Length: 168
Image (cartoon, rainbow, N blue to C red; front, side, top):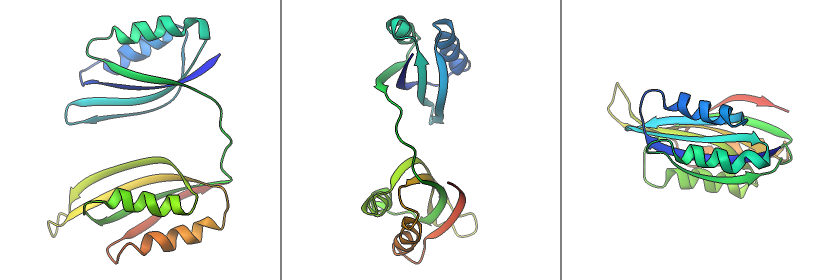
């Protein structure tokens, strides 16, 4: 069995996930992990699959035949797990370059961003433009946690950071 990471994109429509799942199942693939989103009429997904290497080309061809679906893929390998995982919510006033600033601070500490989801919203009581992000991190050294918190708060007085969970 071989693992593949597939990214998919299509104009969203009812039954699309079912079509994709049916195609994968029909070709003997095992759906391991995924993230899917609908943004302004577009469906986007990233999937991790496991499949017999001899069935891969057939599955790929079948997925490419789904109406309007574009995809990319890469063969993957199992990577070592981090020592500690942390998840955070961050809210700040929206401004250009904020994702770059956050990712620079995290990267400078040698921390891997494993998940990142963000939204733009307007504060209901003031109308102020807000940036909201939820991200999961993989730390290689537990001492990175305190440095991370300090670094993210140093971005400005408007930053609100909540730790959601942690696991060893």
